[in-house]
Length: 257
Image (cartoon, rainbow, N blue to C red; front, side):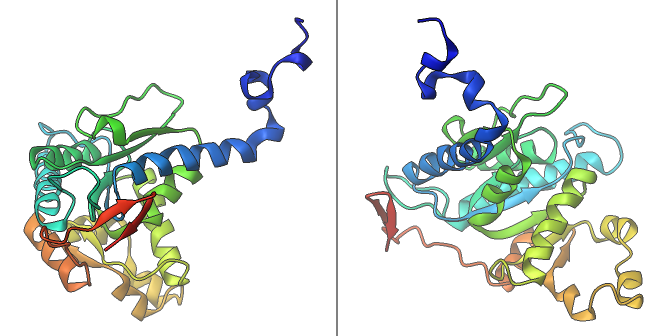
């Protein structure tokens, strides 16, 4: 029968992509990534935000930002607990990015050079975008909804590192800061890379002066100007690397130590 009403619901694209099924699509986007991350034993992440417009051969500070993001991806992967020699072992502090070019690519590249997996949470955009070549293919996801993408970026983050960026980076940064300020998310260390850049973009003193934020809110984050200092600030903020001798395992889709 050719009538659309006779199609199996699970195979009816017109039905699945209709407005009434938006909630189902949200659930599908959540669960597809969730199952893959569990299969790889990913328990926690270190999230790296930053501009897609920063290139390894860029002008001015761009090349430095790219190189430091690459170095940080390697440092965090080697020291944080993302790399495991045996299948099924729990992975902590896995590098996670938006999966695109620029700073995101640099952090994924550093993790790859360390021999560790890394995650790319890509999103469909009006202009064509492909995931960068360095995130682990089995941990590279494509989202339609920004909200679900940001949820996956935030929900298992042990730490956040924010390199210079534009509107998208600011959106991601302020969402995490808001979650922390309102205690909707647990305390995690947050480091803004290149203090001069961030102080030129955001006048923190003016926000305090006008009563828009409290002076104590400035303790939600720290600044750093090189990859090693970023790592040190994360440790100072409470990040706990997982010892490689810890033989934690994933059993039945749940982590136990």
